[in-house]
Amino acid sequence: MRKSFVIACLAGMIAARSVSALESSNLDLVTQTAQQAVRNALTDLQLPKQADGAATDLIALTSTSSHAGNWLFEHLLMEDLLSRGLEVEVDSDATTQMSWRVIDLGITGQSGLLGGTVTRRCRVVLRLELRQAGELVWSGDGHAEQQDQIPKGQLDALQHSRFGFAKTDLEQRTWGKFVEPVVITTILGSLVYLFFSNR
Image (cartoon, rainbow, N blue to C red; front, top):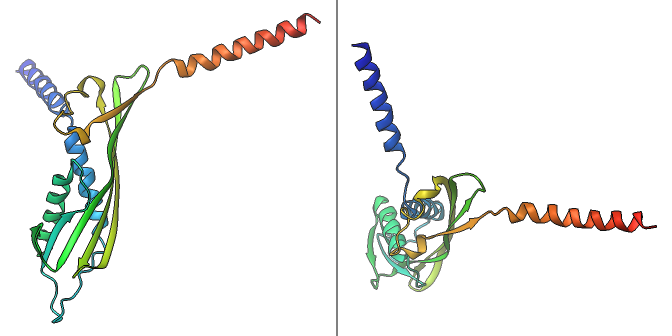
């Protein structure tokens, strides 16, 4: 009885460990970071009044730049504005238009010399502008950064070639950064020693 309990506990721990080994993909990391950037940009959103004094209820979303991740920002902006009780359309001729521009979006990775992990850092910078009848009435910037650590062996599995904007630019540390100063110091020390020993 006691042995079966111990075996069941060990099996549960192994199963829990294998479930926790699943890491979020690069697209998941970009989505979480972009969602935070959108929230940061919209924190002080002030909707203009219409000519009759009523609150604006229809907003058209448009992008001012061509970016491979525009579909993601369109979705996140639409989700946030809809949750505020606003009516949202994409690329419509509504009087009130919100445009976005992706200024910076990328994932950098840094791996250690001996470690088997990669530290991923995702950065998103976004610019939002709200126009009413062509006149700028509000603008906001959203910045967000997130980082996590993943096993080095899972790096390729967590990125997809279809989402090139969510690819990790990996910077690998090499022994050269440590060996080169030691070699140069040794050579210079030897030259100084030889110079003064020949006098």
